[in-house]
Length: 239
Image (cartoon, rainbow, N blue to C red):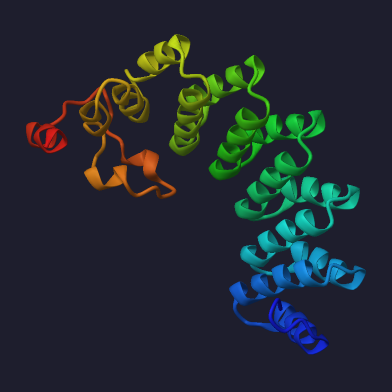
């Protein structure tokens, strides 16, 4: 679209945004249309795709395009609705991230606090915690992170809360909290050990390569601090 911004290109992109059988070309077409032709007809197409496309990638792309090209009250309302109602977790956390970036006010803060606890999936809960700490790094948010680091049912979300606490509040209170959690939580043990040495960090990893590969289930790759660690694993961690 940037090289050949003609009506023919526009028509082709509209057709691809609707009809391509693969979700990635549809997403790319929506992004290009919103950036190059941000008029009412394209806005209507992008908005419709944000709720009606059958795949999550185009829905996410449409939400991002709406926030970038039309950051108005109707877009905000759409993002708030998608953050709670989309059937897939990816559009939900995309909407939360966009709301925090574009409308960082009390209304958004309250929604993020609610989704950090109540969303049914771990990823949106984790993103909500990260956005809260980035935009509203106060004691209320710090206490919420401590609670989620202890009580969230997902190891991923608990790990995100711990990592965010250590990054935003690297003080003695956080150190003490990590030390307390290290008795029962493998990720906390690794994060607390990192404060002292590289060995302290990696000895609680089940596999050394997990240190470098940030995948969705990475926080399940940590050993339980309550169980013995084999000598050969300790030797590998020290190598």
